Amino acid sequence: MDGLRLTDEERAMLAGEHGHGVRRAMEMVIALARIYGATELVPIKSAQVAGVSYANIGDAGLEFLRQWADEGARVRVPAMLNPAGMDLLAWREMGTPEPFATKQLEVVEAYQHMGVLPTCTCAPYLLERCAGLGDHLAWSESSAVAYANSVLGARTNREGGPGALAAAIVGRTGCYGLHTDPARCPTELFEIAVAPASASDWGALGAIIGRASRGVPYLRFSGHAVQTVADLAAADLRDGMRALGAAAAATGSVALFHLEGVTPEVRLGQVAAPTGEAQVVESLAPAYSLLDGEVEALDLVAIGCPHASLEQLETVSRFLEGRRAAIPLWLTVSRAVAERARASGLAESLEAQGARLVADTCVVVAPMREMGVGAVATDSAKAASYLPGHQGVQTRFGPLERCLEAALRGTWQ
Amino acid sequence: MSRLLHGRVIRSGEARGEAIVSPEPIGFLGGVDPESGRVSEKGHPLESQSLAGRILVFPRGKGSTVGSFVIYRLARQGVAPAGMVLAECEPIIALGAIMADIPTVDQVDVGQIRTGDRVTIRADEVIVE
Image 1 (cartoon, one colour):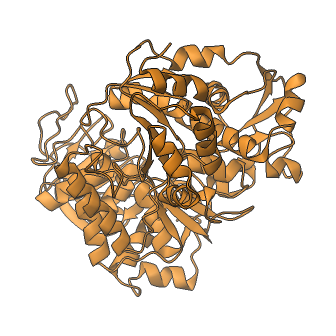
Image 2 (cartoon, each protein chain N blue to C red; image 1 turned 30 degrees about the horizontal axis):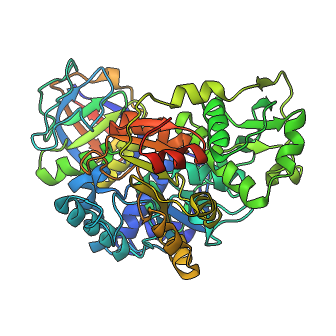
Protein backbone atom coordinates (compact mmCIF):
# COMPACT_ATOMS: atom_id res chain seq x y z
CA MET A 1 0.00 0.00 0.00
CA ASP A 2 2.95 2.33 -0.10
CA GLY A 3 5.97 2.72 -2.32
CA LEU A 4 8.76 2.20 0.22
CA ARG A 5 11.13 -0.57 -0.88
CA LEU A 6 13.37 -2.17 1.74
CA THR A 7 16.49 -4.27 1.29
CA ASP A 8 16.79 -7.71 2.91
CA GLU A 9 19.02 -6.28 5.64
CA GLU A 10 16.55 -3.48 6.36
CA ARG A 11 13.72 -6.00 6.59
CA ALA A 12 15.79 -8.06 9.00
CA MET A 13 16.33 -5.01 11.19
CA LEU A 14 12.60 -4.33 11.16
CA ALA A 15 11.88 -7.94 12.07
CA GLY A 16 14.00 -7.65 15.20
CA GLU A 17 16.86 -9.87 14.02
CA HIS A 18 19.35 -7.24 15.21
CA GLY A 19 17.68 -6.78 18.59
CA HIS A 20 14.85 -4.75 19.97
CA GLY A 21 16.67 -1.41 20.03
CA VAL A 22 17.52 -1.68 16.32
CA ARG A 23 13.96 -2.68 15.51
CA ARG A 24 12.62 0.38 17.30
CA ALA A 25 15.08 2.58 15.38
CA MET A 26 14.08 1.01 12.06
CA GLU A 27 10.39 1.53 12.88
CA MET A 28 11.13 5.22 13.41
CA VAL A 29 13.15 5.62 10.22
CA ILE A 30 10.47 3.83 8.20
CA ALA A 31 7.61 5.81 9.76
CA LEU A 32 9.35 9.07 8.83
CA ALA A 33 10.20 7.79 5.35
CA ARG A 34 6.55 6.89 4.74
CA ILE A 35 5.22 10.17 6.10
CA TYR A 36 7.47 12.04 3.66
CA GLY A 37 6.85 9.73 0.72
CA ALA A 38 10.31 8.17 0.36
CA THR A 39 10.63 5.16 -1.94
CA GLU A 40 13.87 3.88 -0.38
CA LEU A 41 16.33 4.41 2.43
CA VAL A 42 19.87 5.73 1.82
CA PRO A 43 23.04 4.93 3.80
CA ILE A 44 24.26 7.91 5.82
CA LYS A 45 27.84 8.93 6.48
CA SER A 46 27.25 10.57 9.85
CA ALA A 47 24.56 11.75 12.24
CA GLN A 48 24.38 14.81 14.44
CA VAL A 49 21.89 14.54 17.26
CA ALA A 50 19.95 17.36 18.97
CA GLY A 51 17.95 16.94 22.15
CA VAL A 52 20.91 17.05 24.52
CA SER A 53 20.07 19.84 26.94
CA TYR A 54 18.27 18.44 29.97
CA ALA A 55 16.26 21.66 30.01
CA ASN A 56 14.82 20.59 26.68
CA ILE A 57 14.22 16.81 26.89
CA GLY A 58 13.57 16.52 30.64
CA ASP A 59 13.16 13.32 32.63
CA ALA A 60 10.99 11.72 29.94
CA GLY A 61 13.77 12.09 27.37
CA LEU A 62 16.41 10.79 29.77
CA GLU A 63 14.27 7.76 30.65
CA PHE A 64 13.71 6.98 26.98
CA LEU A 65 17.40 7.20 26.08
CA ARG A 66 18.28 4.83 28.92
CA GLN A 67 15.62 2.34 27.89
CA TRP A 68 16.78 2.45 24.25
CA ALA A 69 20.38 1.87 25.30
CA ASP A 70 19.26 -1.04 27.50
CA GLU A 71 17.49 -2.52 24.47
CA GLY A 72 20.86 -2.73 22.77
CA ALA A 73 20.63 0.32 20.51
CA ARG A 74 24.13 1.30 19.33
CA VAL A 75 25.06 3.70 16.53
CA ARG A 76 26.61 2.16 13.42
CA VAL A 77 27.90 5.39 11.82
CA PRO A 78 29.77 8.27 13.48
CA ALA A 79 27.23 10.21 15.52
CA MET A 80 27.88 13.50 17.26
CA LEU A 81 26.01 15.43 19.92
CA ASN A 82 24.61 18.94 19.74
CA PRO A 83 25.48 21.34 22.61
CA ALA A 84 24.43 20.43 26.14
CA GLY A 85 23.05 22.80 28.77
CA MET A 86 26.44 23.37 30.40
CA ASP A 87 30.20 23.03 30.12
CA LEU A 88 30.59 19.37 31.03
CA LEU A 89 33.82 19.99 32.96
CA ALA A 90 33.62 23.56 34.27
CA TRP A 91 29.89 23.65 35.14
CA ARG A 92 30.40 24.15 38.86
CA GLU A 93 32.62 27.22 38.66
CA MET A 94 30.25 28.67 36.02
CA GLY A 95 27.30 28.60 38.39
CA THR A 96 25.25 25.83 36.79
CA PRO A 97 22.74 24.61 39.41
CA GLU A 98 23.82 21.19 40.71
CA PRO A 99 20.50 19.31 40.26
CA PHE A 100 20.49 20.39 36.60
CA ALA A 101 24.15 19.42 36.18
CA THR A 102 23.59 15.94 37.60
CA LYS A 103 20.77 15.26 35.14
CA GLN A 104 22.70 16.80 32.25
CA LEU A 105 25.65 14.47 32.86
CA GLU A 106 23.25 11.51 32.93
CA VAL A 107 21.81 12.51 29.55
CA VAL A 108 25.25 12.69 27.94
CA GLU A 109 26.17 9.35 29.54
CA ALA A 110 23.06 7.71 28.09
CA TYR A 111 24.03 8.92 24.61
CA GLN A 112 27.61 7.73 25.10
CA HIS A 113 26.28 4.34 26.14
CA MET A 114 24.83 4.09 22.61
CA GLY A 115 28.17 5.07 21.08
CA VAL A 116 27.37 8.71 20.35
CA LEU A 117 30.44 10.96 20.57
CA PRO A 118 30.06 13.64 23.26
CA THR A 119 31.24 16.38 20.86
CA CYS A 120 28.51 18.71 22.17
CA THR A 121 28.88 21.19 19.35
CA CYS A 122 26.63 22.83 16.79
CA ALA A 123 29.65 23.12 14.44
CA PRO A 124 31.12 19.60 14.12
CA TYR A 125 32.29 20.38 10.59
CA LEU A 126 34.99 22.79 11.86
CA LEU A 127 37.46 20.13 12.91
CA GLU A 128 36.28 16.74 11.81
CA ARG A 129 35.82 15.77 8.22
CA CYS A 130 32.36 14.37 8.82
CA ALA A 131 30.63 15.43 5.61
CA GLY A 132 31.54 16.06 1.99
CA LEU A 133 29.98 16.76 -1.39
CA GLY A 134 27.09 14.40 -2.10
CA ASP A 135 27.27 12.59 1.25
CA HIS A 136 23.92 11.71 2.82
CA LEU A 137 23.66 12.72 6.49
CA ALA A 138 21.11 12.78 9.30
CA TRP A 139 21.85 16.01 11.13
CA SER A 140 19.61 17.88 13.56
CA GLU A 141 21.07 21.24 14.44
CA SER A 142 19.55 23.77 12.08
CA SER A 143 22.71 25.85 11.60
CA ALA A 144 24.82 22.75 10.93
CA VAL A 145 22.19 21.44 8.51
CA ALA A 146 22.29 24.73 6.59
CA TYR A 147 26.10 24.66 6.52
CA ALA A 148 26.38 21.00 5.50
CA ASN A 149 23.86 21.35 2.68
CA SER A 150 24.94 24.74 1.40
CA VAL A 151 28.68 25.04 1.93
CA LEU A 152 29.75 21.37 1.95
CA GLY A 153 27.22 20.18 -0.63
CA ALA A 154 26.24 17.26 1.60
CA ARG A 155 22.60 16.17 1.81
CA THR A 156 20.52 16.25 4.95
CA ASN A 157 17.04 17.17 6.04
CA ARG A 158 16.63 18.88 9.37
CA GLU A 159 16.10 15.80 11.52
CA GLY A 160 14.53 15.85 14.95
CA GLY A 161 16.77 14.51 17.72
CA PRO A 162 15.18 11.02 18.01
CA GLY A 163 14.98 10.72 14.21
CA ALA A 164 18.69 11.49 13.80
CA LEU A 165 19.60 9.01 16.52
CA ALA A 166 17.39 6.33 14.95
CA ALA A 167 19.11 6.97 11.61
CA ALA A 168 22.52 6.55 13.27
CA ILE A 169 21.42 3.25 14.84
CA VAL A 170 20.32 1.76 11.51
CA GLY A 171 22.89 3.72 9.44
CA ARG A 172 20.20 4.95 7.05
CA THR A 173 17.55 7.55 6.56
CA GLY A 174 14.59 7.96 4.23
CA CYS A 175 15.50 9.29 0.78
CA TYR A 176 13.20 12.31 0.64
CA GLY A 177 13.41 16.09 0.73
CA LEU A 178 16.95 17.46 0.53
CA HIS A 179 18.37 13.98 -0.18
CA THR A 180 16.83 14.27 -3.64
CA ASP A 181 17.88 16.53 -6.54
CA PRO A 182 14.57 18.33 -7.17
CA ALA A 183 14.37 19.65 -3.59
CA ARG A 184 17.84 21.19 -3.89
CA CYS A 185 16.93 23.44 -6.82
CA PRO A 186 16.81 27.11 -5.90
CA THR A 187 13.33 28.57 -5.83
CA GLU A 188 13.95 32.27 -5.18
CA LEU A 189 16.55 34.74 -6.36
CA PHE A 190 17.97 37.33 -3.97
CA GLU A 191 20.19 40.11 -5.26
CA ILE A 192 22.35 41.56 -2.51
CA ALA A 193 23.73 45.03 -3.16
CA VAL A 194 25.50 45.37 0.19
CA ALA A 195 28.75 43.63 1.14
CA PRO A 196 28.72 42.10 4.64
CA ALA A 197 31.66 43.54 6.61
CA SER A 198 31.49 41.24 9.66
CA ALA A 199 29.97 38.01 10.94
CA SER A 200 27.11 40.06 12.40
CA ASP A 201 26.47 41.56 8.95
CA TRP A 202 26.36 38.06 7.46
CA GLY A 203 23.96 37.08 10.23
CA ALA A 204 21.80 40.15 9.61
CA LEU A 205 21.68 39.17 5.93
CA GLY A 206 20.69 35.66 6.98
CA ALA A 207 17.88 37.05 9.11
CA ILE A 208 16.56 39.02 6.14
CA ILE A 209 16.75 35.97 3.86
CA GLY A 210 15.22 33.70 6.51
CA ARG A 211 12.20 35.93 6.93
CA ALA A 212 11.69 36.42 3.19
CA SER A 213 12.37 32.90 1.92
CA ARG A 214 9.79 30.16 1.50
CA GLY A 215 12.08 27.63 -0.16
CA VAL A 216 15.69 27.39 -1.32
CA PRO A 217 17.20 30.86 -1.72
CA TYR A 218 19.79 31.59 -4.41
CA LEU A 219 21.97 34.54 -3.40
CA ARG A 220 23.81 36.75 -5.84
CA PHE A 221 25.91 39.71 -4.77
CA SER A 222 25.74 42.72 -7.09
CA GLY A 223 27.76 45.87 -7.78
CA HIS A 224 30.80 46.51 -5.59
CA ALA A 225 29.75 43.74 -3.19
CA VAL A 226 30.83 41.10 -5.72
CA GLN A 227 34.49 42.03 -5.48
CA THR A 228 34.40 42.68 -1.72
CA VAL A 229 33.10 39.18 -1.08
CA ALA A 230 35.51 37.64 -3.61
CA ASP A 231 38.43 39.27 -1.75
CA LEU A 232 37.50 37.78 1.64
CA ALA A 233 39.95 35.42 3.32
CA ALA A 234 38.71 31.81 3.17
CA ALA A 235 38.12 31.59 6.95
CA ASP A 236 36.18 34.88 6.99
CA LEU A 237 33.97 33.75 4.12
CA ARG A 238 33.39 30.41 5.82
CA ASP A 239 32.52 32.05 9.14
CA GLY A 240 30.30 34.53 7.31
CA MET A 241 28.36 31.74 5.63
CA ARG A 242 28.07 29.97 9.01
CA ALA A 243 26.45 33.08 10.47
CA LEU A 244 24.23 33.51 7.42
CA GLY A 245 22.95 29.93 7.45
CA ALA A 246 22.42 29.94 11.22
CA ALA A 247 20.36 33.14 11.11
CA ALA A 248 18.38 32.11 8.03
CA ALA A 249 17.49 28.81 9.72
CA ALA A 250 16.63 30.44 13.05
CA THR A 251 14.43 33.19 11.63
CA GLY A 252 12.81 31.07 8.92
CA SER A 253 13.10 27.51 7.77
CA VAL A 254 16.07 27.72 5.40
CA ALA A 255 18.00 24.43 5.34
CA LEU A 256 19.88 25.07 2.09
CA PHE A 257 21.03 28.20 0.29
CA HIS A 258 23.13 28.64 -2.81
CA LEU A 259 25.63 31.50 -3.20
CA GLU A 260 26.67 32.36 -6.73
CA GLY A 261 30.33 31.71 -7.47
CA VAL A 262 30.92 30.23 -4.01
CA THR A 263 28.85 27.21 -2.93
CA PRO A 264 29.71 23.87 -4.58
CA GLU A 265 26.48 22.98 -6.33
CA VAL A 266 26.51 26.33 -8.14
CA ARG A 267 30.20 26.04 -9.02
CA LEU A 268 29.72 22.52 -10.37
CA GLY A 269 26.76 23.57 -12.47
CA GLN A 270 24.39 21.24 -10.59
CA VAL A 271 21.98 24.08 -9.95
CA ALA A 272 21.30 27.33 -11.82
CA ALA A 273 19.86 30.69 -10.82
CA PRO A 274 16.07 30.68 -10.77
CA THR A 275 14.39 32.74 -13.45
CA GLY A 276 12.05 35.53 -12.52
CA GLU A 277 12.43 38.74 -10.65
CA ALA A 278 15.00 39.02 -7.88
CA GLN A 279 14.21 40.25 -4.39
CA VAL A 280 16.74 43.01 -3.78
CA VAL A 281 18.51 43.48 -0.44
CA GLU A 282 19.96 47.00 -0.29
CA SER A 283 20.50 47.44 3.42
CA LEU A 284 21.09 45.28 6.49
CA ALA A 285 19.73 47.97 8.83
CA PRO A 286 16.23 46.43 9.09
CA ALA A 287 17.71 43.23 10.57
CA TYR A 288 19.77 45.17 13.10
CA SER A 289 16.79 47.19 14.28
CA LEU A 290 14.74 44.00 14.54
CA LEU A 291 17.31 42.01 16.55
CA ASP A 292 18.93 44.74 18.66
CA GLY A 293 17.22 45.52 21.97
CA GLU A 294 17.43 48.53 24.27
CA VAL A 295 19.10 47.38 27.48
CA GLU A 296 22.33 49.22 28.37
CA ALA A 297 23.79 47.53 31.47
CA LEU A 298 24.99 44.07 30.47
CA ASP A 299 25.61 40.88 32.49
CA LEU A 300 27.47 39.01 29.77
CA VAL A 301 28.90 39.26 26.27
CA ALA A 302 28.50 36.08 24.21
CA ILE A 303 30.54 35.31 21.09
CA GLY A 304 30.37 31.94 19.35
CA CYS A 305 26.93 31.09 17.98
CA PRO A 306 27.43 28.92 16.01
CA HIS A 307 30.43 27.71 18.05
CA ALA A 308 33.44 29.89 17.22
CA SER A 309 36.31 28.86 14.98
CA LEU A 310 39.97 29.18 15.98
CA GLU A 311 40.27 32.12 13.59
CA GLN A 312 37.42 33.92 15.36
CA LEU A 313 39.13 33.37 18.73
CA GLU A 314 42.33 34.86 17.28
CA THR A 315 40.39 37.91 16.10
CA VAL A 316 38.97 38.41 19.60
CA SER A 317 42.40 38.12 21.19
CA ARG A 318 43.93 40.62 18.74
CA PHE A 319 41.20 43.14 19.48
CA LEU A 320 41.58 42.81 23.25
CA GLU A 321 45.40 43.05 23.16
CA GLY A 322 46.56 44.73 26.36
CA ARG A 323 43.03 45.15 27.74
CA ARG A 324 40.70 43.17 29.97
CA ALA A 325 36.94 42.56 29.94
CA ALA A 326 35.04 44.13 32.85
CA ILE A 327 32.13 41.68 32.70
CA PRO A 328 31.95 37.97 31.81
CA LEU A 329 32.89 37.41 28.17
CA TRP A 330 31.94 33.95 26.92
CA LEU A 331 33.56 32.50 23.83
CA THR A 332 31.47 29.40 23.18
CA VAL A 333 33.31 26.66 21.29
CA SER A 334 33.48 22.92 20.80
CA ARG A 335 35.77 21.12 23.22
CA ALA A 336 38.00 20.22 20.27
CA VAL A 337 38.52 23.90 19.38
CA ALA A 338 39.04 24.74 23.08
CA GLU A 339 41.76 22.11 23.26
CA ARG A 340 43.49 23.46 20.17
CA ALA A 341 43.37 26.97 21.61
CA ARG A 342 44.81 25.58 24.84
CA ALA A 343 47.65 23.83 22.99
CA SER A 344 48.65 26.94 21.05
CA GLY A 345 48.62 29.27 24.06
CA LEU A 346 45.67 31.24 22.64
CA ALA A 347 43.39 30.15 25.49
CA GLU A 348 45.83 31.52 28.07
CA SER A 349 46.01 34.90 26.30
CA LEU A 350 42.24 35.11 26.10
CA GLU A 351 41.86 34.26 29.78
CA ALA A 352 44.38 36.99 30.67
CA GLN A 353 42.13 39.35 28.68
CA GLY A 354 39.17 38.38 30.85
CA ALA A 355 37.51 36.03 28.36
CA ARG A 356 36.32 32.54 29.19
CA LEU A 357 36.40 29.66 26.73
CA VAL A 358 33.11 27.87 27.32
CA ALA A 359 32.89 24.41 25.77
CA ASP A 360 29.98 22.00 25.14
CA THR A 361 27.21 24.60 25.51
CA CYS A 362 26.02 28.03 24.44
CA VAL A 363 23.76 30.87 25.55
CA VAL A 364 20.82 29.46 23.61
CA VAL A 365 20.67 26.18 25.56
CA ALA A 366 22.28 26.88 28.97
CA PRO A 367 19.83 27.88 31.75
CA MET A 368 20.88 31.54 31.57
CA ARG A 369 18.28 33.01 33.94
CA GLU A 370 19.08 30.43 36.61
CA MET A 371 22.71 31.44 36.21
CA GLY A 372 21.77 35.05 36.98
CA VAL A 373 22.09 36.42 33.44
CA GLY A 374 19.36 38.81 32.29
CA ALA A 375 21.11 41.00 29.70
CA VAL A 376 23.47 39.81 26.96
CA ALA A 377 25.29 41.37 24.01
CA THR A 378 26.15 39.16 21.04
CA ASP A 379 27.38 39.39 17.46
CA SER A 380 25.21 36.39 16.53
CA ALA A 381 21.95 37.07 14.73
CA LYS A 382 20.82 33.56 15.63
CA ALA A 383 21.44 34.07 19.35
CA ALA A 384 19.81 37.51 19.19
CA SER A 385 16.72 36.03 17.61
CA TYR A 386 16.36 33.30 20.26
CA LEU A 387 17.52 34.91 23.52
CA PRO A 388 14.63 37.28 24.23
CA GLY A 389 11.85 34.77 23.49
CA HIS A 390 13.34 31.42 24.53
CA GLN A 391 15.47 32.54 27.45
CA GLY A 392 13.78 35.73 28.60
CA VAL A 393 17.12 37.52 28.28
CA GLN A 394 17.40 41.13 27.05
CA THR A 395 19.72 41.30 24.09
CA ARG A 396 21.95 43.72 22.18
CA PHE A 397 23.09 42.71 18.72
CA GLY A 398 26.01 44.30 16.89
CA PRO A 399 29.40 43.72 15.25
CA LEU A 400 32.12 41.84 17.15
CA GLU A 401 34.15 44.97 17.90
CA ARG A 402 31.16 46.71 19.42
CA CYS A 403 30.38 43.66 21.56
CA LEU A 404 33.97 43.50 22.78
CA GLU A 405 33.96 47.24 23.59
CA ALA A 406 30.83 46.55 25.62
CA ALA A 407 32.63 43.76 27.44
CA LEU A 408 35.45 46.17 28.35
CA ARG A 409 32.96 48.72 29.74
CA GLY A 410 30.11 46.55 30.94
CA THR A 411 27.60 48.67 29.07
CA TRP A 412 26.35 48.95 25.50
CA GLN A 413 27.04 52.27 23.83
CA MET B 1 -23.08 -3.27 13.34
CA SER B 2 -19.39 -2.84 12.85
CA ARG B 3 -17.48 -0.87 10.25
CA LEU B 4 -14.05 -1.61 8.90
CA LEU B 5 -11.74 1.30 8.08
CA HIS B 6 -8.29 1.06 6.56
CA GLY B 7 -5.24 3.20 7.15
CA ARG B 8 -1.46 3.23 7.09
CA VAL B 9 0.53 1.64 9.87
CA ILE B 10 2.70 4.06 11.85
CA ARG B 11 3.33 1.71 14.77
CA SER B 12 2.14 -1.85 14.24
CA GLY B 13 0.22 -3.81 16.85
CA GLU B 14 -3.20 -4.52 18.22
CA ALA B 15 -5.19 -2.35 20.61
CA ARG B 16 -8.79 -2.16 21.76
CA GLY B 17 -10.68 0.49 23.70
CA GLU B 18 -13.31 3.15 23.85
CA ALA B 19 -12.82 5.96 21.34
CA ILE B 20 -12.21 9.51 22.46
CA VAL B 21 -12.48 11.77 19.43
CA SER B 22 -10.92 15.21 19.16
CA PRO B 23 -12.02 17.46 16.32
CA GLU B 24 -8.90 19.56 16.96
CA PRO B 25 -5.16 18.73 16.68
CA ILE B 26 -3.37 17.76 19.91
CA GLY B 27 -0.05 19.10 21.14
CA PHE B 28 1.32 16.81 23.82
CA LEU B 29 3.94 19.18 25.24
CA GLY B 30 1.94 21.57 27.37
CA GLY B 31 -1.34 20.18 26.05
CA VAL B 32 -1.52 16.88 27.97
CA ASP B 33 -0.54 16.44 31.62
CA PRO B 34 2.15 13.71 31.64
CA GLU B 35 1.29 12.57 35.18
CA SER B 36 -2.50 12.18 34.85
CA GLY B 37 -2.98 11.65 31.11
CA ARG B 38 -5.62 14.38 31.01
CA VAL B 39 -5.81 17.05 28.31
CA SER B 40 -4.64 20.27 29.96
CA GLU B 41 -4.76 22.76 27.08
CA LYS B 42 -7.15 25.59 27.97
CA GLY B 43 -10.14 25.73 25.68
CA HIS B 44 -9.34 22.42 23.94
CA PRO B 45 -12.49 20.41 23.12
CA LEU B 46 -11.11 17.54 25.26
CA GLU B 47 -9.93 19.76 28.13
CA SER B 48 -9.70 17.83 31.44
CA GLN B 49 -10.67 14.50 29.82
CA SER B 50 -8.46 11.46 30.34
CA LEU B 51 -6.79 9.72 27.39
CA ALA B 52 -5.67 6.75 29.51
CA GLY B 53 -6.46 3.37 28.00
CA ARG B 54 -8.64 4.83 25.26
CA ILE B 55 -8.29 4.91 21.48
CA LEU B 56 -7.40 8.52 20.75
CA VAL B 57 -8.87 9.66 17.43
CA PHE B 58 -7.67 13.06 16.15
CA PRO B 59 -6.78 14.86 12.94
CA ARG B 60 -3.06 15.36 13.65
CA GLY B 61 -0.46 16.46 16.17
CA LYS B 62 0.79 19.98 16.68
CA GLY B 63 3.38 21.92 18.65
CA SER B 64 6.81 21.09 20.04
CA THR B 65 8.83 18.06 18.98
CA VAL B 66 9.39 17.34 22.70
CA GLY B 67 5.79 16.08 22.51
CA SER B 68 7.22 12.69 21.44
CA PHE B 69 8.87 12.33 24.84
CA VAL B 70 5.64 13.35 26.58
CA ILE B 71 3.83 10.45 24.86
CA TYR B 72 6.58 8.14 26.10
CA ARG B 73 6.21 9.56 29.61
CA LEU B 74 2.45 8.93 29.55
CA ALA B 75 3.11 5.29 28.74
CA ARG B 76 5.63 4.95 31.56
CA GLN B 77 3.07 6.42 33.96
CA GLY B 78 0.45 3.98 32.67
CA VAL B 79 -1.84 6.76 31.48
CA ALA B 80 -1.19 6.73 27.72
CA PRO B 81 -3.86 6.06 25.09
CA ALA B 82 -4.12 2.34 24.21
CA GLY B 83 -3.99 3.24 20.53
CA MET B 84 -4.08 6.25 18.21
CA VAL B 85 -5.99 6.82 14.97
CA LEU B 86 -5.25 9.93 12.92
CA ALA B 87 -6.17 11.57 9.67
CA GLU B 88 -2.56 12.56 9.01
CA CYS B 89 0.30 11.63 11.33
CA GLU B 90 3.36 13.91 11.49
CA PRO B 91 6.76 13.04 12.99
CA ILE B 92 6.06 14.13 16.58
CA ILE B 93 3.18 11.69 17.04
CA ALA B 94 4.84 8.96 14.93
CA LEU B 95 8.05 8.93 16.96
CA GLY B 96 6.15 9.21 20.24
CA ALA B 97 3.98 6.22 19.29
CA ILE B 98 7.05 4.14 18.45
CA MET B 99 8.91 5.18 21.61
CA ALA B 100 5.88 4.35 23.72
CA ASP B 101 4.83 1.16 21.87
CA ILE B 102 1.34 2.50 21.10
CA PRO B 103 -0.33 0.91 18.04
CA THR B 104 -1.04 3.80 15.66
CA VAL B 105 -2.67 4.11 12.25
CA ASP B 106 -3.11 7.19 10.07
CA GLN B 107 -4.79 8.12 6.79
CA VAL B 108 -8.05 7.00 8.33
CA ASP B 109 -11.41 8.67 7.69
CA VAL B 110 -11.70 9.78 11.32
CA GLY B 111 -15.15 11.34 10.73
CA GLN B 112 -16.51 7.76 10.83
CA ILE B 113 -15.66 7.40 14.53
CA ARG B 114 -17.61 8.86 17.50
CA THR B 115 -16.56 9.23 21.12
CA GLY B 116 -17.73 6.14 22.99
CA ASP B 117 -17.46 3.77 19.98
CA ARG B 118 -15.63 0.49 20.66
CA VAL B 119 -12.56 0.58 18.43
CA THR B 120 -10.05 -2.14 17.61
CA ILE B 121 -6.76 -1.40 15.83
CA ARG B 122 -5.23 -4.43 14.14
CA ALA B 123 -2.25 -3.67 11.86
CA ASP B 124 -3.68 -1.34 9.18
CA GLU B 125 -7.31 -2.07 10.07
CA VAL B 126 -9.54 -0.03 12.35
CA ILE B 127 -12.75 -1.81 13.39
CA VAL B 128 -15.49 0.47 14.79
CA GLU B 129 -18.41 -0.98 16.79
